[in-house]
Image 1 (cartoon, rainbow, N blue to C red):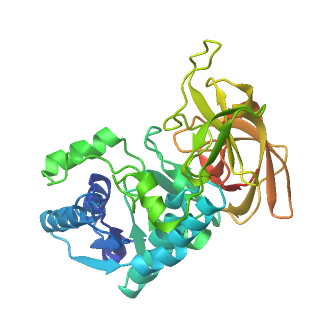
Image 2 (cartoon, rainbow, N blue to C red):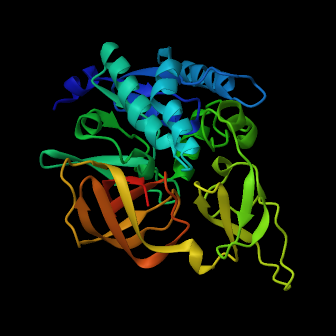
Length: 364
């Protein structure tokens, strides 16, 4: 492709107000693309400055677009978000599982609703500030880990398909965070020192229990040991996740064991939360898991009994594993070493070296 043709390619960048997407837009403009910014508003309920940063994010995105001299549009995807992401989020919590809304938001909003809208804007491709990479391998597009292992976000992108990857660019995926910050400083971008956003986008910094209580009824019950001894009371199973330590309200035991308590299971039939003492308690470890709602990026499921690596949560070190079988839409994963606090509702994401193969939702 000639440079003249590249110049005519229109790239719509999802400008979030953060430093990563801002630098992504700058890099694309430097390469000669026709760059447009798009700010996505995905949440409207109780959108106040006290907890939600969307207003400041929008102002930052507009300021960056002004510095980079690129046009910017605002699009409201809050209805789509509520229908495709938030309703699923609530259903999963009500079922006693712990979902990851960022995974669904990427698949349904940022790389579906956003891609569709960008296409209407005349975009050839879209771009975001994710730390991940896309590589063409024959006729297949592969999703690769970001070069910066401490910031890699491929875990959140494993549900993307071939059509989405073919039209997506990750301009900062080959950079380290410190390099992105340095570029932002060099350009004197207004958000150069802005902290990375954390947590669930629609909850922000507000208390999680207070937020969830508005939407779902809660039923208090007993906290028990695996042997059935009552050691406390929970305020509702949905507020707890496996491996949780904080907020249980349980002290040491009479025998002098002062090790902290951890949630190891939920018994929904009896409305009982099961807890054990000590981070290394055997009840917190699992050698296998099952996953459903599978997505394989290449369109082909991976070989069984091959040695892969997997993450059962973001920022986890890759754990060597084998896929023992895939049948009836359920993937069976066996780990070389037992995994801590494998949580139903979270995603297991499978890798072959740097290539993200896909994954599914942990169901057992």
